[in-house]
Image (cartoon, rainbow, N blue to C red; front, side):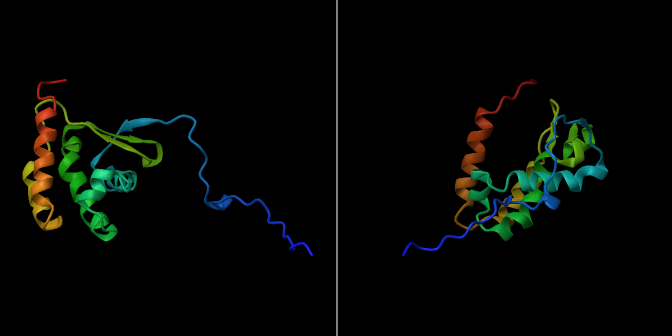
Length: 140
């Protein structure tokens, strides 16, 4: 006797009530300080699977706790410089630092010292030094 079969309806993976329409055109605008927490959250989501970020913060709680502080220290000065941009609906962000404006290195060092695994700081600071070595330092 053949096994019984059941027809399963072809349902979408995401219920239609939760589906967002695809953006066919994205408006980009200058972000304000009022946007910072929403855009930081967008970047937290965007980098949740980033290999280097998850190497630094492999535990989900650790990542969600500390990565927003990393975003503010790394790109927060873009808001002061009026070089932070937001996509429609705050779905994405770009934090650009103009020539002469650097990340908040002291805040990053303090964050890393208190938030990364005890086994990681030597490797992490070595990676950051290599990144700085290859970073373009003249205005571009």
